[in-house]
Length: 258
Image (cartoon, rainbow, N blue to C red; front, side, top):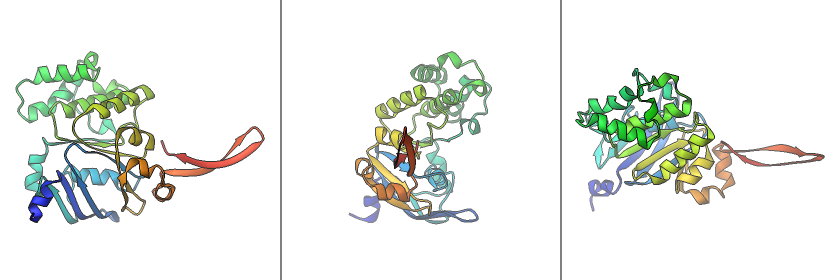
């Protein structure tokens, strides 16, 4: 089997990828993702998760190394073809909102990609997400969790093959987070969930890719095994230890980051 055929086993493959602004934010990243695989990309703030998602979405391009999508090397020309195949949800929904109504927000990409059944798609996805009552309202006036639902609906309306999620539960209340977990468990797509919330990652994915504060991948494997590996979790700053006082008894133990 030649190199091109090997890459086709994976929908995404990164080889020795590096990226930097003034300083390096991704260091020698190697990653393979199969179709319909659900992965948690774990790491503390500043580890490089968001930048890595932007590279996967072909919004940024590696300074060094290569990115292959379906066996083809990604460049600026190919990136235009990926826009419909890859949807990315940013951490701050306000950075994505720019239309006057929820209907317009959801329908925007459908118009851009030339869909004809736009109204039907908008109504169906809004019902699925429980946001049909907001269709005529401004998305700016919605809660953080409702905004995330709107932006997620606007992505899924055009049915991308891959869903990239950047800290999606940050703006969500507990009820919406519960809805989101159920949504992830049911969706039949390739998903990369970037988060520092081990609880959500554990409930929704079986594979974990962990980045440390040095912008490197230090673990790629089973989520269940990761939860037992305190050394990796500490190195990635995903757990911490501090003292507690219960009445007159003081003790310390590890805590997950949420």
